[in-house]
Length: 83
Image 1 (cartoon, rainbow, N blue to C red):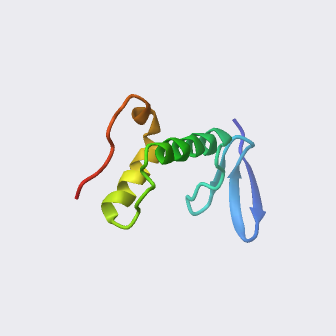
Image 2: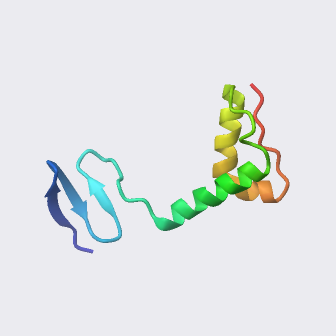
């Protein structure tokens, strides 16, 4: 797989159409599948009341974990974190 190098806005990019690597090691390209996964996660977490009260760190962490691990919510897992 050959990589092409191009410069945009003073940042040198190495990559092809499937991935974009930046000189500083920051990944810029986000897959559509990843975005869809997170959107579904937010919908499921909202449906399971993880976004009702986000005033404490425990609730924020619980909401984050619920969005990332939303398939577990479908199997009845309780992802509420208590600190």
